[in-house]
Amino acid sequence: MPEKMLITKGLAELKTLEKRILSKINEAEFVSAAKTSHTNISPDLTKKQFEDNAKADLASIIALIERRAKIKSAIMKQNTITKVYIGGREYTVAEAVDLKNTIRFQKELLYKLQGQFTKYSNTVDQQNQAVERKIDDLIKTALGNEAKSNSKTAYPLIEEYKKSNEYSLVDPIKAKNKIDELSKFIDDFTNEVDIQLQISNCNTEITID
Image (tube, rainbow, N blue to C red; front, top):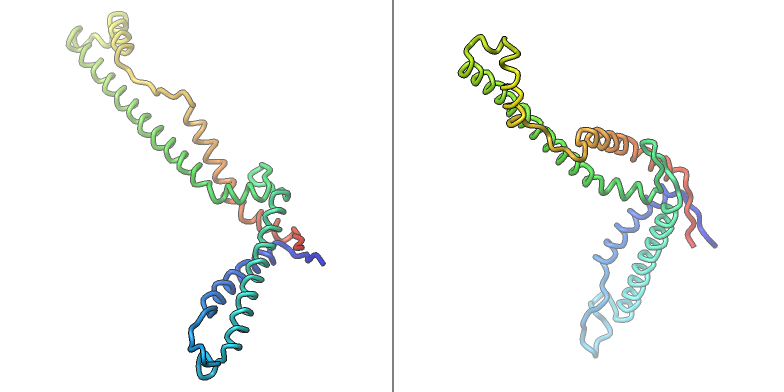
């Protein structure tokens, strides 16, 4: 008869099963050696007892492994169907779990974008400040200290030098917008994913054949 349980119970049982499987494997004795003419493996254990114990332990371990596989399969199957809403987006539980485990990629991309945008924005600012200082020096040298106030005289020189030397960002992806979008996505997802998965698991049943 099919067995039903909430996913929260299934997840808890998976942890218990994994501990029991490893414990039983560690404790089990499946093969030994003894004199052919003797009926005992040891003073307090007969060959027949050893054989029965070995078979029983193997059957128990296999049953636990199969039980774990059935529960895991039922959870995975249900997770491809059940929907959750995180940060205003719809995901299957399977998608949300995978994204939770791989969101480090989005974080790495964000760090890269932030680092390059900050670095080269600073470069542009520093270089353009240097251009402004150079313009002041050129005006003073070529036209005298009062020339900067004479816009008709200074303007063509300033514009020509700026055009040849000023810096600007080469930003084909509009990095600031991408940074803002990615930051919001990561914050919204990481702040909500655990609670939304917990709510889903507490309200979703699986069927174990």
